[in-house]
Every structure is written in C-alpha cells, then in structure tokens.
Length: 300
Ligand SMILES: [Zn+2]
Image (cartoon, rainbow, N blue to C red; front, side, top):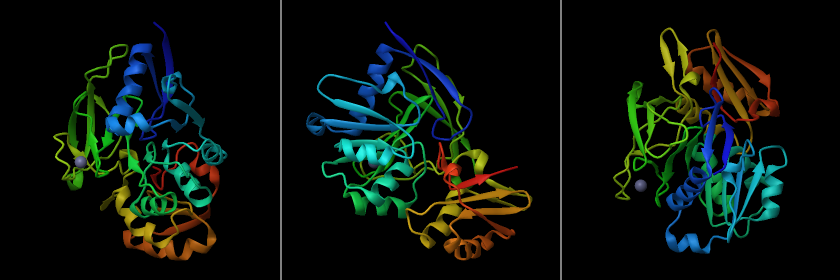
C-alpha cells in the first residue's frame, strides 16, 4: 500500500497542514467526490475531468476510463484548462473568473468552485459566460467537508463527518470537524477557520445546508465598537465593480486599505465609508491574490 504526503492551505488559507493518505484513502476520496457531485447516470457520461489546485498531489490522480488531469494554479491555468476542454471542472474562483472572461468550454457540463469565495454577482457572471452554474464544494486539508445538491446549495458531508458548531455572531458558526473515515491520520475535533452560516434547502437532504464559506475567522474586521463579516463587505462592493475585475479590502486597526484599479477606487471607497473608518486606496497587484484570492482581509 502506498502513502502520499500532501499539503493544502484549505478553504480558509490558514496555517498549512500536512496530511498523509494511503492508496485506499485516496481512492475513497476521489470516489467520494465524484459520487457526491453526480448522479450515477451523469457519472457514466463524464469523460474528461479537470482539477485545478494549488499543489500537485498524487491524491488527485486517477486512471482507468476517466481522463482526469491536474492543472497547477498559475497565470496560465485558465488557458490550459480551456485547451483540455473538460466536461467536469473543479477550480478556485479566480480560475473560473479568468475562464469566463476570456475562454469558452464547449463540452462543459459540471462546474464546481472551491478554495476561494465566490460572491453572487461573480457566480451569475460565470453562469452566463460558461453556460453552467458553478456550485460550491467545501474542501480543506482535513478532507472533503461539503458538496452541493442539485439546487446548488452546499450541504455538509455529515454521513462521513461530525460537524460541531462554535457560535459566531449573526447565526454564523465555526466548524469543529471529526472525520469518521480517515484512518492514516485521525481528524478528531479539529477546529477550522471557516465562517459558515446555516441556510435552508428544499432538496430534501437531511445533511445540514449552509451558505458557501464566506471567509475565515481571522478576516473578520474588528474595531472596538464594531465587527464586520466578509460577506457584508462583499455585499456592499460586488455590485459596484465588474465581476472579473479584482479588488481587495483589508481592514486594520486604523481604517481600511482598498486595492483595486484606479477607475473603480472612488466608487468603492465611497461604499466603504458605511463602515465608519478612513479608507486609503492602493494600486492592485496580481500577487495579492496568489496563491489564494481573498477579497476581504484583516491585518492586525
Ligand atoms: Zn439541497
């Protein structure tokens, strides 16, 4: 039996974890993802799968009937994925936005995003351009934590996990995860950085429905008189800027630093005044979003 050592920054971008998995666990993992995402009839029709991830891991390779390719995250990811023309694609939000802005995927039937947040306006933009709605998957170093149902709602994988909830303001919570399947490295009551929020879904699943991960606990803006959650910031700014144009808003103890193209700065800065803090504009740089795109951050 072979073992692989992989690493990932998880959905939340916190401390890098290292995990070790056996061949059996890798097989289980790949099978779990495919089975969670697709009905058996759809599964049989899938031929080309593209996974765009930050680190090249044996974990994600497979063989047999499926042509499953791994694409490392970088400036050329979108072009390389477009050339492969998958029918199923899992990629971080920034790759999907780059694909939607400049490429076509004529055979695409199933589309998933993970590792980075995606706001409603960006999701609608990708749906419109690529013709398929990107649905969230929730995956971290600790494993495969959530999958979307047919309605596109994220459900926690409570058939293989126990997810305890540490309350956060506004009904949100921070998950504490115990994995019931992993054997090589136990995941027991592991406290994750992600901010989750319960929602409802009409699909009938008994697994808890949550809104897509809105960010990480470390990126909640904290001033003495006020806490602001990442989704509140997204909700204010996203309607004011084209979905494929970059921006980063970083809260800090003395105000807010806004990085975006100059043309958008006045409009976005004005919207940020609602949080009652001074706003400073800086030039956006692509390396701000590499390896992980986060629109909303906190710098203590
Ligand atoms: Zn559902």
